[in-house]
Length: 74
Image (tube, rainbow, N blue to C red; front, side):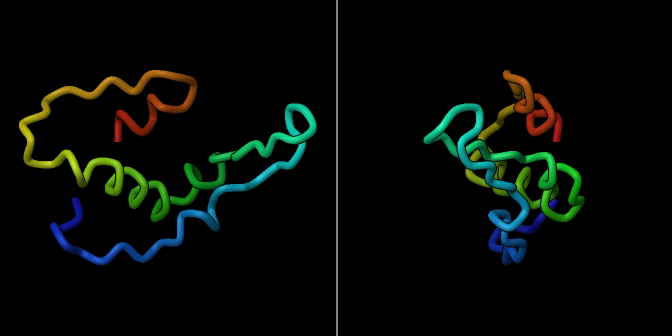
């Protein structure tokens, strides 16, 4: 767990692949597979998602949708 106020150093945008015109023209699909495969990037993405909610007494998280479950489990 990162300490409160700790600097976040991973540029997560570099770990997300953009696929233009998928699944149809005019749409840019953001593939997070490469983010999930990068341990530092994955760790930091989970920390960034959790940071605003830390210390609020939350005891359960539901990660609903195809890839959301893995972030909910982080």
